[in-house]
Length: 329
Image 1 (cartoon, rainbow, N blue to C red):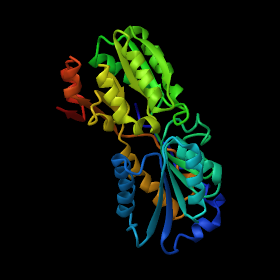
Image 2: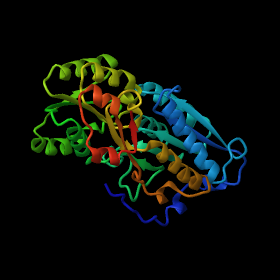
Image 3: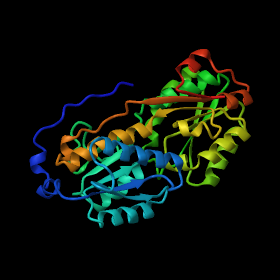
Image 4: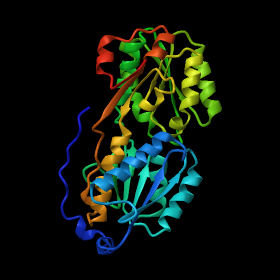
């Protein structure tokens, strides 16, 4: 995947409300963050810390120059909306939306406060911005995986587990409405890999168990988990069930691997939060979101759990080991 490059747009700042620029020399600035994670999720805390660190590096020491109001919620649209309303009511200078559910909620409650989204797949297809180069309105940010990643996940899983012949694709349509965008690339690659695919939408931990038990009964069964804030929060259950039913499984984030997941390939999201600090900084200094094109991922991670591979009777190809960013033995 190649990173797309965009030319910054001119002229948008003139249309942006003068109140935003008038505040740029005010005292402590206020930033609202809606995280699509549980508050005790260690990875989510690291992501938020990366945002804080990025702001500090850009001349914004916390407490002296800015204050962050944070809310945490997963797979609860009503709660996300309530939290978004609370943040907007706090007279904030800029909002940060982590994931699609958070951005959906923020878009419902404000069309004027600048919003920087982080880790949102297909922002154009989901209707958040008219184009990546010209986001328009009050929303811009950092997109997540592209549709072509679907084929990459399938290829990597088949390379590591050649006997896989039937693969269940798991995601929650409510928290990952963009999930189907990955299917065409998988379906295009499946015939040449002699793999049959089945789509398994899930809405609860019980659904996850039913889907995994079902594919686990199939000979040559395997699993692909689509990037999804709900599934991120269920990673312990998902990896444990995959191990119990001896399913080779591909995950979209490295954080599944220490939990016992077999293989993961996806975006380095902590880096994305660090990069998002630049957009928050520029908006706080008076730049309009319309001048900030939506950026695509620049860092991807491949992680492999050798212990899990051994338990499944799999030999990891040397080329895959050499290209891995993290190997757990």
